[in-house]
Figure 1 (tube, each protein chain N blue to C red):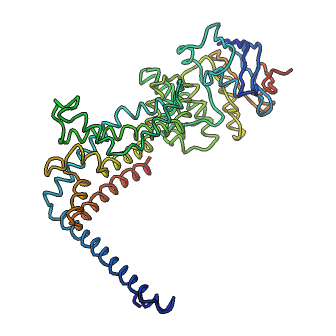
Figure 2: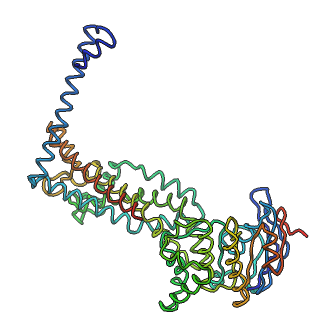
Length: 210
Length: 261
C-alpha cells in the first residue's frame, strides 16, 4: 500500500507536534522512522492508522481517502500491546473471526504464524499473563495472521532479548518479501533500521530532518 | 472488671450526672444488643422454619429487583460502552447529565412513575399502579442512570485501549463494543451487582408505586419500614439480616468469578 502524506499538521494547543508538507511511503518497502523522544514518530503512526483523526492535511492510501475497506488492511502493533484476557491462540484468532474465514483456514493460519514466531508453547497461556517480550511476539503474530497490506510497528522489539528480536525481524522481513507488504517501523535502534529497512526517515521536533 | 469500674480506675470517681449518663448508655447498649441478638435468633428461626410470609416477601423482592436490574442492564451496558469510547458533539454535557442523574432520589422516581401510572395519569388506563410491574418500572428507571454512568465511566477509562486494538485489527464500532463488554465483563458484573444492591435496598420508589400490599407488593425494605413504625424490631432486624445475606451471596459469587477470570 502506497502512502502519500500531504500538508500534515498536528498540534496540541499552540504546540505543533507534527508538520510534514509532503511525504511518500513506497509500496512494498520497509520504512524506518527514527528520531528522539517526542519527535512525533508515534503521532505519525496514529495519524496513518486513523486512530487519531484530529489533524490537518490528507493521507492518501493508494491514492484513495481512508475508508472502512482500507482500515481492514492496515494494522498497528503498539509499543505496549494490549492482549485480550483469553488464550494466546484466541488472541491471534480474533482478526480472522472478524473476517469470518472458515474454521479450517482460521486454524491453519493461526498455527502457521505461531510456528513462525516460535510461540506454539504459549498457545494456552492467557494473553494478559505474558511477559513483555512474549506479548510483543503475540501482538506481531496477531497483526500478521490476516495478511494486511500495511503494517505499522511502534518500537516492536524494545526491551526484548536478542533471540526474540531476530525471530521478529525475520518475520517482518518475510512478510515484506512474501506478501509485498508495506512496513512502517518506529525504532530507536539505528542498527535495526540498517538491518531491515529499505529507507529511514528521521523526525526531529515533528519535522522531517536530513 | 465491669466497664464502669474500669472507667473509675482509669479516670477517677465520676460525678452523679456522669454516672447516670454512663448507666444510661450501658442500658441502651444492652437493649440494642438484645435487639440484634433477638433479630439474629428470629432470622435463623424464620429461615429454618421456612416462614411462608418471609419467603414470599423475599421472593417478591428478588423478582422485582432482579427483573429491574436485567431490564436496565440489557440495552444500557452497550449504550454506556458506545458513549464512553466514541467522540461526539456535546459529550461533556452528556457526561454531566449522566453523572448527575446517577444520584436521583428514589422518591422522585417513585413520584414520577406514580403520576404517570395513576388513574388520571397518561398511562393510568394500563391499571399498573400498586402492582409488581409498577415497582419494576420504577426500579428500572432508577437503575438506568446508575448502570449507564458506571459503564460509561468504565469504558472511558479502560475501554479506549481495547477499542483501539479492535479498530487496528479491522473491527467496526460494533465489534469494539462487543469486545469491550467481553474484556471488562468482571467489572461490568460488579456494576450490575451495585445496581441490584441499590434496587433491592431502596424503599422510596417501591413504597410509592407498590403500596406495600401484603402478599402482592410487600418487599423486604417496605416491610422493615412498616415493622419499624409498628415497633416490631426483631422482625425488622431479621429481614435486614436476610437482605445482608442476599448481598453477601451475590458479592461472593462475583468475587469468586473475578478470581477465576
